[in-house]
Length: 403
Image 1 (cartoon, one colour):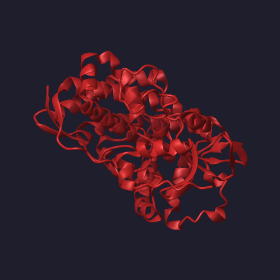
Image 2 (cartoon, rainbow, N blue to C red; image 1 turned 120 degrees about the vertical axis):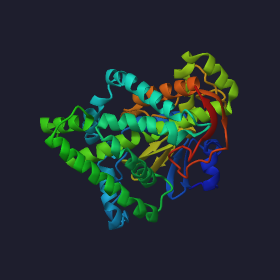
Image 3 (cartoon, rainbow, N blue to C red; image 1 turned 45 degrees about the vertical axis):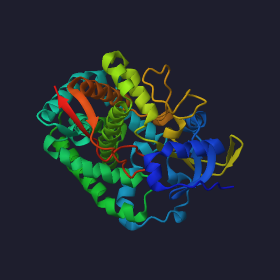
């Protein structure tokens, strides 16, 4: 039986956690309608963790939903085809093959080697903020830091960085839960443009290799790992977007939370050793991504529910992070919290391979902002982006002296 939870888009963007709490009180795994979709809404931590680790819940819709039931206009198929080649939307063995290949760039040692680079970029951006009394933190700092890092890692020319915000916005809209066919048609051209850009850049690297991730992907392909060019393009686009979009939200959400909790801000400013713990609490309290999805690969019983092949599972990472059975006083923001548990990087086979880099960037970003921004004050209450799955702001305007 389907439960119909009342939901208002504008209210959800401002406060999704009240909605998640209401759903969890009904059932941590609830069959309902959410925006444009009908399926199982998962808001319990243990239930979400179980689903994300269970091979009966898969990412590839085409394996379980008959093609004749997928009413996809031809106009958006180029973007659909590209998305389906991303490891984010693949299952084993293809997901394993793609992940193992790309993971070579995200080993703990290689990420730690980026520490100097991230510090230098952060210092450069802070320097550019000097001389102004007011700042828009996203455009001045929290967007640019991860974009500079991931474009350098991939080997994207510096002069092309400005292209990626539009492409990233298009991709985020494309995979959101609250997206219409009309929305998809509008953003498909941007995704195709991004695909063509990386196709040309890959072609350049085939002619002249460099010490970057794109060249590494080409070498791996030629060594017999069977990475097709379309898979390479999809991987580059995913790394670009996943490599900066979520980190933008992590940094901006985190600094906003500290400004809204002045006592926590003071504690952290006086004890920088708490920064790693603060980042984990920021991730728990305001996950950069609050939804992911899975499809039931077969008929089976799950937690006293009768599941049918093709059932959609809308797994709320943000909702699970607020489950009081796992976290005491989950609605309290506390950077001194011990043994912080969250699913903000997912878990299981699709655990975010960029998590070590995101943590590094988040820690350095917050440390720099604490050190260099004196007497920061919010100029206005920021508005949330109109997105269901991703949790970020449109702008974050502050007044602060830069030292």
